[in-house]
Image 1: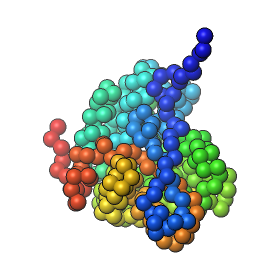
Image 2 (image 1 turned 60 degrees about the vertical axis):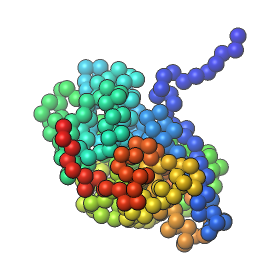
Image 3 (image 1 turned 30 degrees about the vertical axis):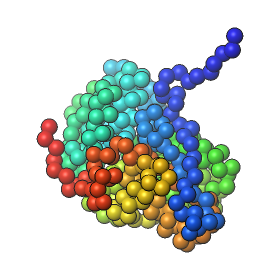
Image 4 (image 1 turned 90 degrees about the vertical axis):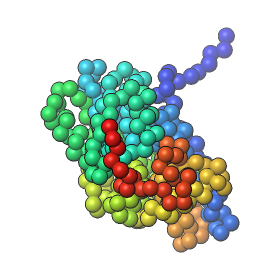
Amino acid sequence: MVRISVPEGIIGQIGHTPLLRVRMFEREFPRLEVYAKAEWFNPGGSVKDRPALSMIEDGERRGALTKNRVIIDSTSGNTGIAYALVGAAKGYRVKLVMPGNVSAERKALVKAFGAEIVYSDAGEGSDGAIRMVRELVAHDPGTYFYPDQYSNPANPRAHYEGTAVEILEQTGGRITHFIAGLGTTGTFVGTARRLKEHDPSIHTIALEPDDAFHGLEGLKHLPTAIVPRIWDEALADEIWYCQTEPAYDLARAIARSEGLLVGHSSGAALWAVRRLAGTIKEGVVVTVFPDSGDRYLSTGLYGSPHPTLPHERGREVR
């Protein structure tokens, strides 16, 4: 009898995402190879499945997370979906603090996995959600397990042990440049650290929105935000600041030219790749596409040349 080897449960499918060739810049820069980690192939649909699983399992190992505690954290959406998925798979209750203006798709996905949502002030963005979750935990610390994705070393460790290793394997170690956006900063920090250990000459570029009032969901403008404690600026050879509209334009362009439906932050990554291409002409560039565009359809990203930005939407009636 032939035994079929399959992972146990859905969380066994997290990680090992494909590295896709991006062709949109090849005509202008024929000697440049561009690749993107397609993180929507994770079961929760985003790169955040990796750190969510890492932080939850770290809490289990330390004994900080037990069945009588509720997993709680602040999130702009993707980490919340990942917490909800992993919590459902492992039998934990999950409570999430989210800004009121995150996309309808993200809210619906969190609820589909059975998690509870508490909405923070939309105008205060992710920082408002951080402040609210800290208040909730301080008021009733015995009830909650608070991973704190912005401060937890298990967040970047997921990328140090996973994402970066996969990139090195998938490129045969040929990568010359790495680009990633900054939200919690875990993806960039963990991946860049491992890549630099492998080859210090790999050039790393961290990407932020150019303004506090931006439309790049999942990314943070660190100069005006609560800076994550896991952030390590020394790992970035350069930090670039992207405007919202060019990122939207490139997200739309790659959907129509290559069939890759990606989110706002992936458009920002493409903007950085194009800027880099104009200076280096050749190399092996790897970036991260954190999620798919299907969870942003209600924002107008793909339905209007000038979608309403998150900070411009009215506060949700709830």
